[in-house]
Length: 315
Image 1 (spheres, one colour):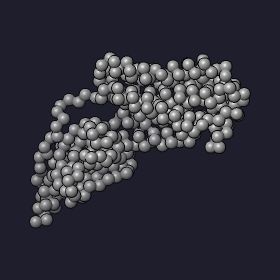
Image 2 (cartoon, helix red, strand yellow):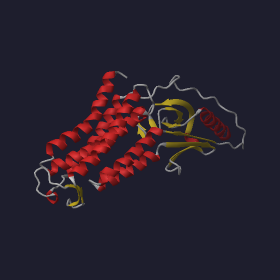
Image 3 (spheres, helix red, strand yellow):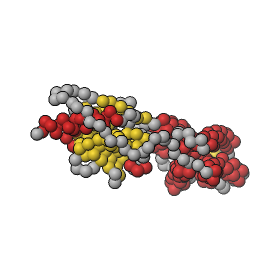
Image 4 (tube, rainbow, N blue to C red):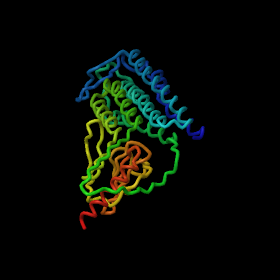
C-alpha cells in the first residue's frame, strides 16, 4: 500500500471529528438548548438533550471510533488481514453519529424551541447513507490480505468408494472480519436509536445478518453438498449429487463472485465468508457453485468419488 492511499483513507476517517467540531462551533449559538435528539414516526420531537451533553456524547463516540479507525489504517500498511474491514467498520461508527449530529444542528438552526424542529426524510437518508460511503471508500483504499501460495485451482484426486460404503465430510470457514463488522454495526445502533429509532432497528437487523453469515458450513455426503450459515446452520442450500459433474479446489475471491454471503454472478452461485481456499462444483448444466471452506481438498475428492460411484450404479 502506498503512503498516498493510507493518507487518503486517514483523511476520510478524520472528516467525522472535523464535522463535529466545525458544526458545533458554527451553530452552537443558533440552535435551541436543549436540542431535539429524537422524533416519533409522525415527525414530532419526543426527546431532547442539553446541547453540551449531546455534543460531549457524540464527541466521545466519534473520537474513540476515529482513533480505532486510524490505528487500523496504520495496521493495514503491515498487511494485517483484518485491518481494512475493521477500519471500514470503525469509520462507519465514527461517521454515523457525526452525520446525525450535523443533521440535527442544521435542522435546528434558527429555531426558538426544540419542538419546532423537523428532520426531513432526505436529511435522514443522507445522514444514514454517507457513513456507508465513507466506510466503502476506506475499505477500497486499503489493501486486502496477502495470501501465500499460488491462486490457481488445484486438481482433485478421486477416491475409490465401494458400493454401499457410507461416508461424510463436514468443514467450515469463518470470517472474524464479518463478525467484527456485525459487532460494530450493532454498537452503531446505540447513537442512532436516540435520533431515528426505525433506522436503528434496520441497522440492528443488518448487524445480526452480517454477524450470522460470518460462518459457512459445508457438508458432503451421499445426497450431495449442503451449505449452511450461522450457528443454527440456517438457511441451507443443497446441491444434489445427481446435479454435480465434478469438484475441484480453488482460491475464491469474493468480488469475483459478487461479494460476501450467498451470491449470484456470471461465474455462478457462491457461499462466501472470506477470501481464500474453497470448493468449486461444476454442475451438469454447465453452471458452477463455490463455497469457502477450510482444507477443501478432501471434500473435493469425496464429491468426485461419490459422482463416480453414482455413474457406475447408473450403468
